[in-house]
Length: 362
Image (cartoon, rainbow, N blue to C red; front, side):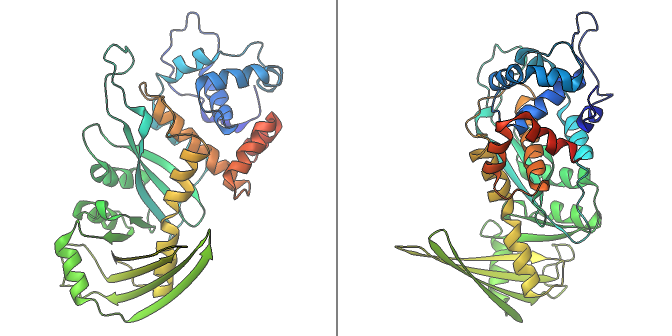
């Protein structure tokens, strides 16, 4: 079969189909799906059209006489273990955070993934699926996500995701909702570090920090663009070990003051963070700035460039598989040197050779 490494990535995956009547291998179905999503297709019907359009090239590439229909690929994927699929793609990409890098953690709701029908044999009624993303902020690359259990929230999923990543020496950054004792303990116990946002949802901690904060080092950054001027002032203060003992190893408080000047108004915001690191104000300013890339370089791209929020894929594990494969496409685009994801997707839609070039880089 094809020399594409993505084919080998799926070899050995459990195939739940009956042997009788099986015409296409599981590896072929999954490889076609990943190629199709990388080409920018947003649904199974579009995938089917894309396969038909490139049929002769794909048959020659994979050395097969026929190709599966979109419905056959969909049926195959309903029985795929999405965590196994994500792990294999992560191994294929060979993306691992290095010691000292910042890994941003944030949950995202797949808005159209809710299921209200009670007569669907493949999926019971459920609310919209929430996936927690892990994003290597320095390189713009995305790690395998973790699904939030139905009826729960991302607070419970974060410690499990941190354990699953099995990394050491990285700096996890997350918003105030996830500033929880268990999360911070899990990070420290696994040999990692944290930068945790503090807002009014932690009233005791927030009030205590705001009252005692006395800056020992400050740095100011000014940026202009997109019709606004943004000024950020980042100050730090060493935290006495016995002041907030419930937050494991907390060593530094960071204060971030943001001022955005738009055409007709001025917006101001003050945020606090706690961390077990002892870095300079400039280093914390850089980490906190790139940490927010999980919003505009992951979630925004999946919504706007790949139409994730408009997708009504909702059956079984299909929403998870689509989200994971969109992450794969973004990683491939970035590793190929693209900074504009819409431009990269347009180029891939022009022909199969552009997509194959991305996969052959691996």
